[in-house]
Image 1: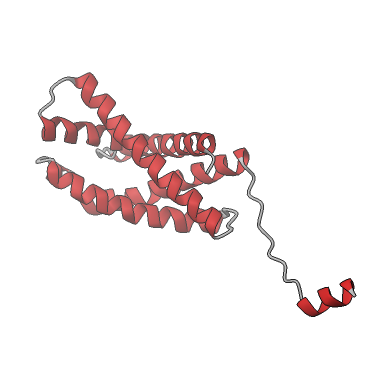
Image 2: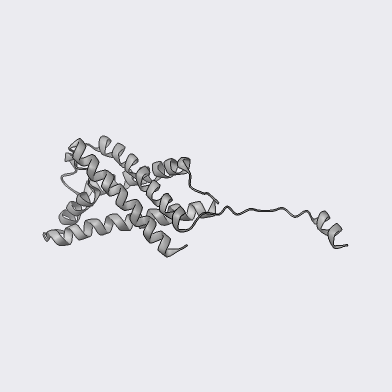
Length: 165
């Protein structure tokens, strides 16, 4: 796995997802900003009342999860010999979204104010946000390290014998 590709793809995917979430939160007037939610969770769980530490922790957790999901996506694409297309972006986004929903469900139980977020709407947002994330990851992954399908060729032993005789 190319670490430079992993880092840049993960940064791009996480950044476009964050921009999508901040815009959606503003338009819908909902609290969908993942780094901000993580900041609140860190503050509540660890009783840290330094805003700079909490904000840095929220963004760090958000990007670390993005790098982890990027590594998984790139490994699956490599092992299955997939050049990510629109179909793969949507499927990967839905799978990442379901994972994200389960993780957020757990995280929001930690935060006593989790009842303030309408979870069904937040879950729908997470599905869309993760499709945006996978789009960013796939785009940069393809630009940095063009996917080349591995062609398995079958060599017929009988033909090979005829050529060598």
